[in-house]
Length: 160
Image 1: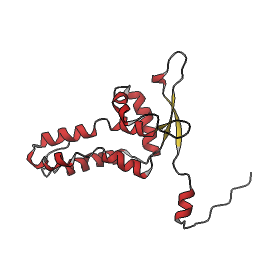
Image 2: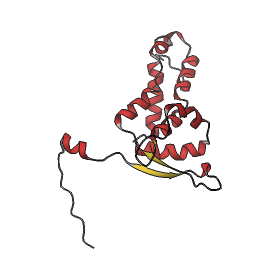
Image 3: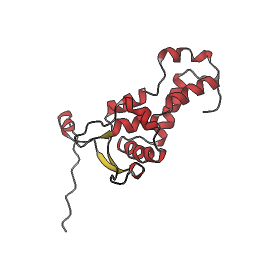
Image 4: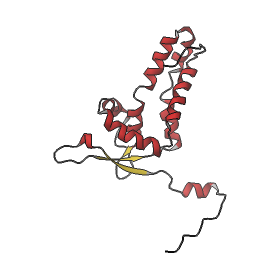
């Protein structure tokens, strides 16, 4: 079998980058959602840069709340962080599940419903969505720290 020639190093330009299809999809089996006549699958698409920015921004507190954080106790601030981070998995799953044409199948209104579904099912989808979107576990920890820092936590208290 002939070896494929090595690609040569090429510095690319915006027109080339715009033409490359770099958002990947992967079909994920979700046995927790099976029924007698349905073998459940979802198509998961990685987020674009702007979609990821929006997803991360959803974790940040309302500016009005953030401005009052310095007057709160560390416990109150941690409670706000937990509240903002709650549902992060369901929000990512909602953003990344698409139909055969690449259109989202869940709206932002479906996040609450997804958050009530099997954690095992959500985790199967979340792991793929995170990988395709370039999200690492360290990124989630950094995001939680950024949320807490944005809340004005200048104390040396432990993490949530």
